[in-house]
Image (cartoon, rainbow, N blue to C red; front, side, top):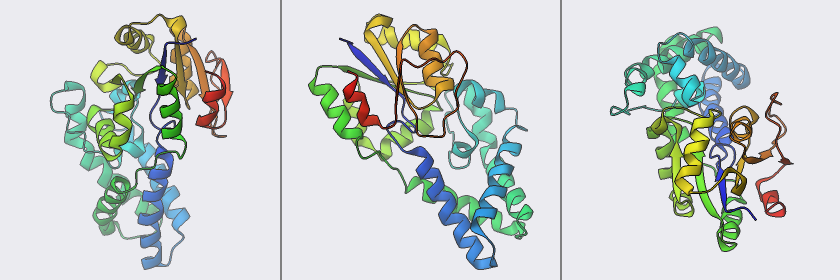
Amino acid sequence: MKKALFFDLDDTLLNDKKSIQTAFDVTCGEIAEKYEKDAGEIEQHVRTAAHAQYETYSFYPVTVSIGINPFEGLWGDFGDVHYSLFRDMGENIADYQLKTWKNGLSAAGIPSFEAEWARERFRSVRRESPFVYEETFTVLNELREKGYRLLLLTNGAPSLQLEKLTMTPELVPYFDYILISGHFGFGKPEKAIFDHALKLMNVEAADALMVGDNQGTDILGATRAGIESVWIDHGEGKIIDGANPHHTIGRLKEILTIV
């Protein structure tokens, strides 16, 4: 029997993709209605602009190593002033957000002066739209009742990930430790952060199980650390060479058939 389970946060316990999609749906939908455009086309232009713009900033390498995607960048403040890694990001994130919306809206044939409104609307809707998977609390409750110790292992800036947890405070008490890559300095799939998680929980790799939706971070990192893993395949995940999940499930609740 395993002693400890490590859980990813975004798109494992929280439906982050749904939160982002909701923010796009509302923001682009309202602009589309005003200008008689197609909301889906506007969204696609903005998503394309976000990827292109993100890579132009000096903070981009940090987002890769810590694990912060361009759409998190569209709503976060990154006011992690006590962490040198994020100071540059915090100083420039508003510029990134505004330029992304300007470029995306212009590509969709919409006046760029709408960018400031769109930026604020997207940020506001995203903050109002946290989604927890319907089985999350059932699973966590049952695991705790069975005596498992739980650790949350999430990539991202401390300010952003803690804001997500503040939106869903019911999650926090289930975990013995919450380990955020931005606090540690390296993100999944680096072996070091998994080794640190094992030390925090005072368990050997053979006594732990990693659960996550991303083969490139959660599963590959667990494999590097010698930790058994469970991949939640939502039907859109990439297969990563060397990840080699021990178990594959389609829903979080299926973890209860494994442990």
